[in-house]
Image 1 (cartoon, helix red, strand yellow):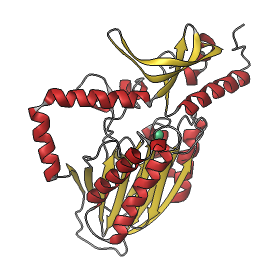
Image 2 (tube, rainbow, N blue to C red; image 1 turned 90 degrees about the horizontal axis):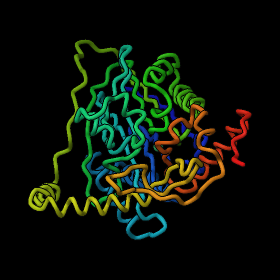
Image 3 (cartoon, protein in one colour; image 1 turned 60 degrees about the horizontal axis):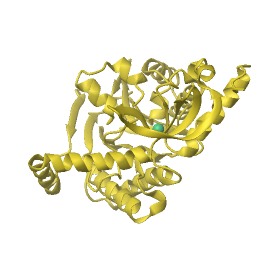
Length: 365
Ligand code: MG
């Protein structure tokens, strides 16, 4: 199979850094979306992809093994270097071998297959809301607007070992693959994504058009897209290749032991998870409302009984009710999440600009 690829990445309209990173190094392609304050996100996404690329070029082991080693590299760096403590990243990568596309995936970036007028999601988001959808607690539509839709249940670099999802796709002539960060899928519907992929034959231009569409819709996050086109080198007959399903990589010995330990001392693990959750919460930021005014919060916009997972760090002079009248910020009451304090402050700055263009008096007297 011949593959032609094009990519685009953009900081978006709100964020101060582009923490996404992508790779086009035929036959290996990847997208990573970093998270963590200050420099953490950028370091995590780049280190993850470069580690996978180096291991791939060294020619030993499977792609999933490369991802597990990249996880270890990001984790160890975050433990060693206080400046990037707590960083993590998504990673969605594909290796094309003959007519097989091997896909590995951790986090909430995505891979799609466009085949014969049908856009199919090949990856599963490792997010809290996706877990709730699977349990039937909320619908897919509710998940898309859920205030905690950015909370990930699995990210590369946050624990010493990681479970990697693997999928293989037997490519057909004319197949188009899309790898993208959530900055695309949070802003643009799958119908719009499909319409752009179907109307733009050039992969580079298709990738750029997707990014422009996300920016036109608000560009609230970094946006990265990699588009791959598969073409048969020469026509052959009798090829009945098709999608062959999803599987989870077999657990290593260490992972098996870990599961046994988890089964035995569930309470300890729950305690450790909670401690990890606290660390996670301390690295989260959002813009919400406090006493009727816009405020920057550290934590996540959630409560459990009387327990709050956030506190105000900056009280603004903007009236929350005025800001909420702008459609982009109708979720203010639920909280608009950010990856760092700087990003949360940038969202507030954007609110001020948007209020200015909307010609409204947003500043409280
Ligand atoms: Mg993102």
